[in-house]
Amino acid sequence: MLICFGVSWPINIAKAWKARSTKGISVLFYGFILLGYLVGIAAKLALIRYYAPAPWYETVHWYVLFFYVLNTLMVAAGIAIRFRNRALENKAA
Image (cartoon, rainbow, N blue to C red; front, side, top):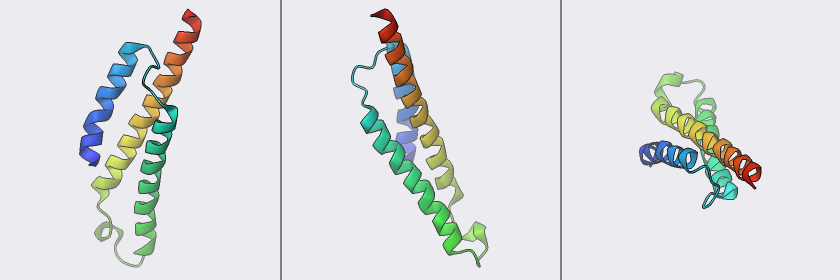
């Protein structure tokens, strides 16, 4: 799932950047996706804390945490582009 989303977000970002429009973009949708990724990151960090006595590198699949962070950054970029596009629409109006 994380890999598929990881491939999809750059395509979405490029499309939104070129479109220069907010049509079809929901901040609420982006917000829930962002919240989901943040909760995923928190869960991985909580797992590290839970298994603190054990060697940390044996308790967590770090590559999953990397993809959560990467996807979080891409969603944040999508939100920023949405606000940029809204400003461009307001300026043109």
